[in-house]
Length: 126
Length: 107
Image 1 (cartoon, helix red, strand yellow):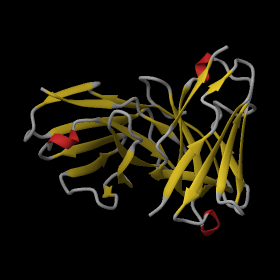
Image 2 (image 1 turned 135 degrees about the vertical axis):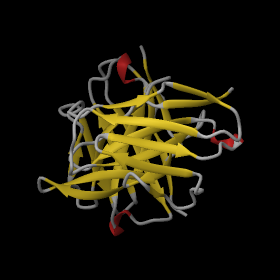
Image 3 (image 1 turned 90 degrees about the vertical axis):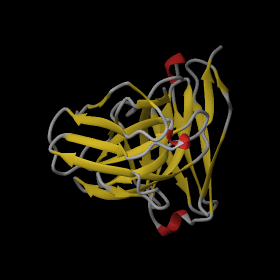
Image 4 (image 1 turned 45 degrees about the vertical axis):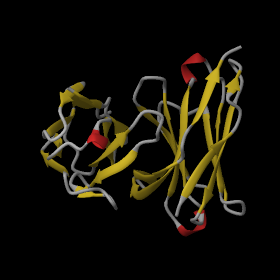
């Protein structure tokens, strides 16, 4: 059974960097799929942040480009999110997820999300 | 950027009734398809439908997806108590975006 688990600080100060890690069990990242970060602000909808493939190839939402970095560590079967210069607007539940994928404009892009972590609430506040 | 608009915002129904949820794309994109998710309070979303009409593994056949041009529909033929939740649509392929959600609540 594939399981994903987010971990990281639940409180981040404004202007600092949000860092989260997703631990994948029951499936090897090296086998395939895209690995994705998605967030959901309190009481609001879902927002895709970006994705990473086992090779390290990344694909980011234009809304976060310039502030986001997603990396993968196949030796530990984990992938990570870094979001810089955070503000209160970045307060949200952050989910890691596994996605089927395809090619678009020669880039590996995520399609739909079939396995999700339970989510990690990150609050941006001083 | 394609925008997905879900309607209605809230659907108030009784168990045993049928539900029809709409998701409309702001423009046509033949390179993209659609998925539907169910989310209950305090839980992560769960994949229901992909490819507009293919049920994900383990999803009961009372959940049915369909498409007509830029209009996508999720139909729950007979609502079970566990179906009361928020439903999101998601476009993928050339574009990746989520709709704002429809809450199906008990009347």
